[in-house]
Image (tube, helix red, strand yellow):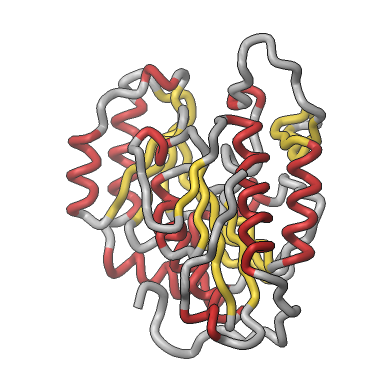
Amino acid sequence: MSTWTPAPSPAAALPGARWVVACDLDQTLIYSRRSFRLPSGAVEPELVTVEHIDGEPAAFCTAASAELIARLHAAATLVPVTTRTRAQYERVDLGVRPRYAITTNGGHLLVDGRPDEAWAARIRERIATRARPLAEVWAIAQRLAADGWVRVSRVADGLFVYLVAYERDGIPDLSGLAAGLAADGWGLSVQGRKVYLVPAGLTKQAALAEVMRRAAPARLAAAGDSLLDAGMLAAADLAVRPAHGELDEHRWTHPNLRVTTVSGLRGGQELLEILEAGLAAAGPAPAPGPAPGPAAGPGPGR
C-alpha cells in the first residue's frame, strides 16, 4: 500500500490536535450478504456479525475489519455517521462504544448513546424554514410507490422519506424528479435498492461539524460510499471511498480522496486499512480534553 502524506490543515499546526474518524455504516463499514461482492469462487473471509434483525444475522464485517475498528476507536474519536434512523442504528454493534454517533442523516447527534435534544430542535427548525413540507414529499413518494416498483416506503424519524425497490434495476429514471425536488429544498439519492428523499438542510456534514467543534482541536478523516457522504468527505483531511456505490458510479473525486482497489466487503476492510495508515503517517495524537457543551450561536449550516 502506498504511503499517504497528510495535507496541511489549520488543525495540524495546533498542539494537541487529535483525529476524528467519521465513517458511514452500510456498504462502507458493514455489509449485508447481497452486497459482499466477492469474486466468483472466492473463499468467504472470517466474518463478524454486527447486526441482527428478528434474531437473524443481517449485516457483517470481516474479522480483520472488526479489529481495525477497535484500533481506530482507541487511537482516535471514531464517529459512526449514518442515514439509518436512531432505532436502526441501535441494532448495530461494532464492538466499541463511540462517544459520538450521527444518525438520520444528521438529524440526531448522539452523545454517549443519548440524543442531543437541542441539536435535534435546531435541525427541525432549519428544515421547516428552508424546505418543502415533508407531507408534500411523502405524497410524491406515495405516487411513486403506486407504480409498482416500490416494496417499502417510510418516513424516517419525521425528517425524510425513503423507498426500497424490489430490485435495483426496477428503479426508473428519477432525474426529472431530482431536479424538481432540488428547487424545493430537497435532495434525492439512490443507494442500491433504496431511494432517499432528504431535505437539503439535513446533512451529515452539519452534524459532523458540531462534533468537530466539540472535539477541537482535531483533524478529520472520513469514509463513505454515497452522495449523502460527499459533504463530509470533501471536508476531510483524509477521505476514503470504496470502489462501489453511488459515489463510485458518479466517479466522484476530491483532493485528499483515496479509493479502494477492491469493492464490497473486502473494500470495506481496505478503507479501514487506509484510514489506519493515514493516522499513523500523521503521527501520534494525545487524548482529547473535556468536550465543550452545545453551541449557543447560530444553527447548523452557518
